[in-house]
Length: 104
Image (cartoon, rainbow, N blue to C red; front, top):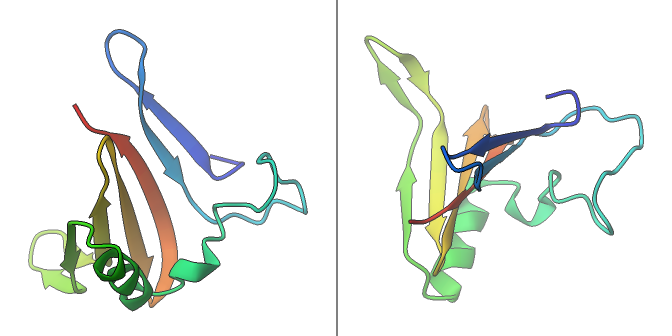
């Protein structure tokens, strides 16, 4: 979590999910090249929806909702690719979490 990365493995120890969140990392970038945690192109849900539509990708979008049990449910967009999905969650209009998940 300190680096903004968390990993989830299945029972066979295969990597299934990567959670990436923006963190103050004091200049350290564990990635080669641009830091994907910043995802500046997707600074809003509208940018993600436009990206998916322009590329004819399947996607789901949910606006921020208030739930009596869970409280505020942040706005999110999930984009489906052939073998994985990318879920973008926005809190207060800013990118809060990116989840990469392998599809079965």
